[in-house]
Image 1: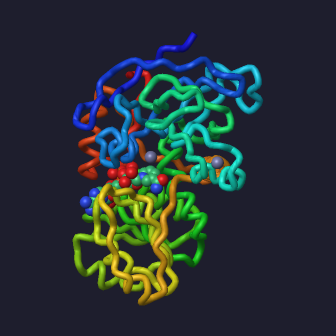
Image 2 (image 1 turned 180 degrees about the vertical axis):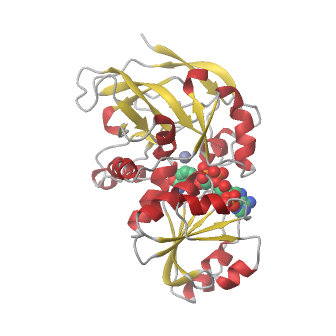
Image 3 (image 1 turned 180 degrees about the horizontal axis):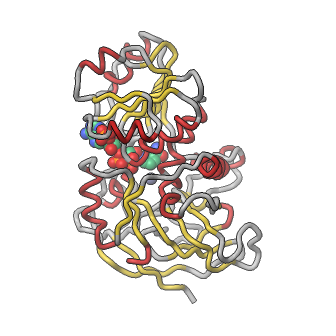
Length: 347
Ligand code: NAP
Ligand code: ZN
Ligand code: ZN
C-alpha cells in the first residue's frame, strides 16, 4: 500500500505553490522511507517551479535539500536503520555502471542522473521532491547526517553545501589561495564558510555592503560591493579561484578580469539566459572558465563529515509551508539570510 504524503505543489509556471497530496511507494528491497523534517528552498526550486529553464512536467513537487529520519527500510537494506538521521540531495538514482557513476561522480551519469524532482524514476513515474512529508529513496543515494549538525541546518548542505564544496575541493582551495565568492545567498554563504574552513583567503563580492558584517562573521577576510566600480579596479588580476553563485545575468567579463594568471572562475549559478564572454578575457591571462554541478554521493558524505568536524551548518530561517510563496519572492530579491528552510511538520 503506497503511503500518502502531504506536499506543496506547483501546478504551472505562474501559479503559486498550493497544498496537495502525493503517493509514495512502499520501500523496495534496497530502499528506505524517510520522514522529512526539513527541506531547504534552493533557488533551483524556484527556477524549476517557475519554468525558467523550460521542460517541467507539471504538476511538480520541488525540493532537493532534504533532512529527516528513516522511518521504514526494505528487506535488503544494510546501510540504514529506522531512526537514523539522513539526508537526500539533488538526485535519487543513476545508472551505476557508466564511467562517471563508477568514479563516484553520479551527478554526471552518462545515462542521465535521476533528479530528485522533475525527473523519471526507475518505476517510470515522475519523481517528487522534498516539499512533502516523506520520500522513498534507494539506500545508496541517501546520506548520513552526522550527530553534530542539527537537521534544519543540515538540509541546505545537501545542495548548497555540496555545490560549493565540490569546486572548492576540486580546484584546491586552501592556505595561500585567494578565493572569491560572488553572490552571498544560499550557495554563497556556505562557500564562505567552507572556503574559510579549508584555510583559503576568502573575499565576498556582493551587490551592496548590506551583508558585510555577516560575511566577516562567517569567515571572509575581505568584502567588496560590486555596485562600486572601484571594486573592479582594486581587484583586477587578484584571485586564484572565483566561485560564481549568481542566479541572474551578470557581465562575466567584468569578473574574469579579477583572475590572476592561470586563475579559474567556476560557474555554479544557473541564470536562464546564455552567457557571453570575450575570448580576450581568457586568452589575455591564460585564465579558465569552468562549471560544476553538485557533487557525487561519496563527496557529499565527505562534505557532511567535514562540516560536522568544523562545526558548520547553514544559517537558516525556518518557515512554515504557508510562507513558501513569500519566501520565493524574497529569495529572488536577494533578501534571505541565508537559506529558508521549510518545517515539514507544517505541510
Ligand atoms: P540565492 O540564495 O538566491 O543566491 C544567489 C545570490 O546571487 C544572491 O544572494 C545575490 O547575492 C546574487 N544575485 C542575485 N541576483 C543578482 C543580480 N541581479 N546581480 C548580481 N548578483 C545577484 O540562490 P542559491 O540557491 O544560492 O542559488 C544560486 C544559483 O545557483 C541559482 O541559479 C541556482 O539555480 C544555482 N544552483 C546551481 C547548482 C549546481 O549544481 N551548479 C546547485 C544549486 C543551485 P548578493 O546579495 O550577495 O549580491
Ligand atoms: Zn539546489
Ligand atoms: Zn551512470
